[in-house]
Image (cartoon, rainbow, N blue to C red; front, side):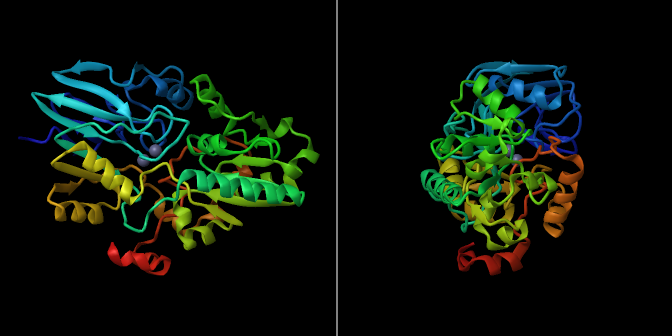
Length: 381
Ligand SMILES: [Zn+2]
Ligand SMILES: [Zn+2]
């Protein structure tokens, strides 16, 4: 049987349904998995997304976009293809796209994680014949510690700083990561202060029924209070003049890439907390297994490694070249801190933080050399 979904220059294309999934060029009909910048782009004639994504997409792409929202599990038919959306556990509103045509079922995962996250609906395994999976952290070295341990470490770091009268600045992507971090903070330690790029998304989350601790803007905070506050900011604010207002501070970055010492060094922060909204290696394998798919198509991330692994365990696997999580990675890797610092300094508190974890501004392992330096475990890759 011919592939139901193929790669075209505009993006992943559902042939019988005549629509695109997270297309990177403007198209007539786009089905969007989630509102991160590398998946949800501007300029499509018609958008279809989860109900929980609609307001986020409008706030990022413009209130006038032509968008239709679907509840998770609700079905609609396009050209004989039954479409439904299922939670991906990645960020608020993130969805896997299930497509059924003449008894054949394909699921496109978008970005996903299988670990706990109180700020979005948990990943739902969907049985299918073909599963299109992401592989951002598709190497055996990537294994996440339990979320609660990471939250405990962050709170301990914050408490220690507060006891010494020093602000704590924690960098994480403004959509998704920042709210997940918020959900794990202990507000008894001190005030939780948010950058202007983060606070509007907190509002969308709260409106969506997600419980978050109280937050305040930098401008609403007395200078004396910064001494025991934690400040949540997008990575682009790191190293910028924006941080001067906090006086003495310690800073940290929360990302899956923080597992790599090189990535921490390039970020130039005091601490790295390993927390990702993508599945780690065991999570990817668990999710793929749960779909019972016999054919697996691997997209952005470590395509060759995961494809080889899946073939070895008897699945029919191949890769799709996509433009998710890829653009500007080289640039980000070559010139990380200075470039972002300049941008942040000139645009001040501008909300330029559109990226997903796997995009610009995020260091990536720079191939074999980095892998070799970073860990002995690479040998089982
Ligand atoms: Zn992505
Ligand atoms: Zn994403």
